[in-house]
Structures are given as structure tokens and as C-alpha cells.
Amino acid sequence: MLNNSELAQSLIKKGVLKSKKIINALYDIDRGDFVVPSEKENAYTDYPLPIHCGQTILQPSTMAFILELLDIQYGENVLDVGSGSGWSTTLLAYLAGRTGQVSGVEIIPELVKVGKKNLSRYHFAHASIQEVKKDVYGLPEHAPYDKIMVSAAGSEIPADLVTQLKVGGVMIIPVNKTIFYFKKISEQDANIQKYRGFSFVPLVSPRAKKNNFDLKFTLL
Image (cartoon, rainbow, N blue to C red; front, top):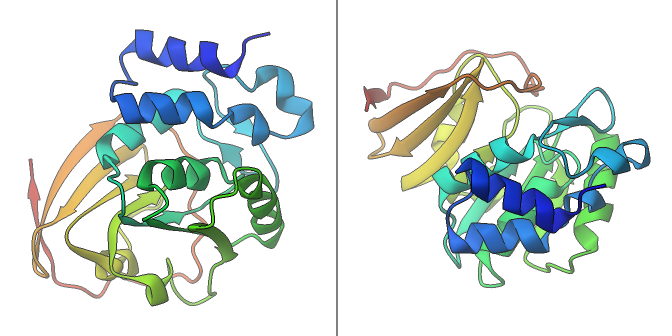
């Protein structure tokens, strides 16, 4: 059976894991700590795996790709939407360092409990996971965020998350089968890059509602 170091090495060989700090994160945060017992033997394969409540833990190569795009810096304030098993929140906490703040939010109560337990193994006092409010995306009380990571796919970019992202901040969010790199240039403008060919579980929305912002997107 593979181990976590071999998983990281395979991602480096594939070319999706490049930055030294992210390489260190993938080495030091063991994916095996975040999978369900029945999937332990598959923890270090490059596949998404089932966790609880019909959700999955991200495919490692997809996680590495997203983290490279986000480029988390020490001391940043980061929001993790759809924290699931806690793997993404823990990786973000490692990258933001103890001077940063990482808030994981999850709408499924059972996953909140699982994610908190898994995160606690790494003793990151600057990171937390909590159940999201039922009428809004994200966690407005800790905004504005330097970076936002969304781990499940919606049909559009939620207005709530755009509002919570600071000017100059970056959000990585799947929309259908495309990863969007969203950089907020001003309160009225944003640059977007698209990366196609990915697969995600659906984003469980707090409440179906339409976007109500007037923001100009520039596709790069």
C-alpha cells in the first residue's frame, strides 16, 4: 500500500504539485487521517473517495491544483467552503501559518463533527470548522477574506462569497465541471480564468436564491 510521501511524490511527477510550501503541506498533512476506515487502503491513490453523507474527499491532484492557484501566504485570512472531512481546512491552516486565520464551514452537521475531529489532530489553534448559517453562504462575521476555497460545484458564483472576498483577493470555485480562478479587482470588477475538465460533488446551498450583484467580469 502507498504512503503519504509516495502520494506527494506522484503529484510532483505529474506536474500538479510545484511550490515548495505546498509540497511540504502535502507531505506533512496525511490524507489517511481524513478518509473513512473502509477507504484507508485507498487513501494515497489519486482518486476522490467517499466520506459521509454522499460527499467525497477531493482527488489529490485536484487539491494540489487548487492550492497552487490559491497561493496562500502566511498570515492570510482564508475561508474554506465545504470543509467536508477537514482535509482542505487543515491544509489551508498549514499554509496560512499560525499568524493566519482559517475558517472552514460546512452545512451538513455530521460532517462538521467529523471535520472538527480530524482537524484537531494537528493542533492548529488558528483554524476552525463550524456549521454554516442556513440563510447565507460562507461566514460573513470573519470577512473580508484574502482567499476563499470552495470544494463543491454550483451553477454560478454566489454573490455572498463575492461580497466576503476583499478587493485584491482570490476565490477558487468550481462551477459545473470548470474551476474558476476569480480575482476581485474592485467592488465592480473581477478577472476570471477558467480551467475545464474537473468533477465535483454538487454544492449544497443554504437556500436557493439568485445573485443580486452587478459585477463586471473580465475573462483572461
